[in-house]
Image (cartoon, rainbow, N blue to C red; front, top):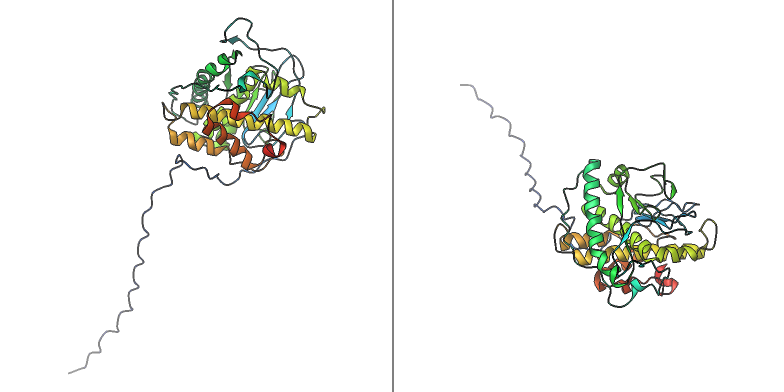
Length: 328
């Protein structure tokens, strides 16, 4: 009888690693004042075609009054003033006009705030028509909210429109490049220019970012309506508006636009399409950009937005009365 050798022992089976514990996806709209990682900012431009941590301002030297605007790029602001344009309505009389004052502007008096509004925003999509519908509905809601504040200050309400295409020239002259702006406001034709490709490259379908950008741009429109932009233009001292004194003026303009944008968000948070968590996320978005000599430090870009959101009055947005250290 032959001996049969036993089969060789099987190699030991490696223990199966335990499965990772499931964790929910982070909620992009959750309230969070901690700013996202900084967004690179383009170097300052020589001729003021820049953007605040989201907006650029340009004021035309011909017969126009002001321009401004975007959300990612650094830059300056041309400032000069001319004839007032745009169709005005609202206020208490036919002779209602902007008041070219800064800290003493009637809009910054005690007890003035944007009013409530229910923003029934359509779906946000990547098609140009979808973006235009989303922005124009948001601008209509911004107008509805800001009208009581302007009426109380006895200042005009001007129509504002949105364009998602970029003309070679507008009422504010030659358009900026994508490296210089994400969106911008032209006071000469009271239009917010938010080119589809630029906005999608910057924000994708992040609703908070789109809302923050348009609300900031509309903040420049409110400055235009009230005469603040015109008064700021008068303070510019150099042809290219890039002297230290001029950059300080631009920072006060841009930080006030952040505050005005957040004031609107405070007025509409929790109603319609803008939930309180979405409004919180939009305000937090104002702190996503790097420090800028024309738009202020990242800290101040967020702190002025929070001032408007928390205190809920235009007086909280008086960037003109504070020392330079608070708008650095």
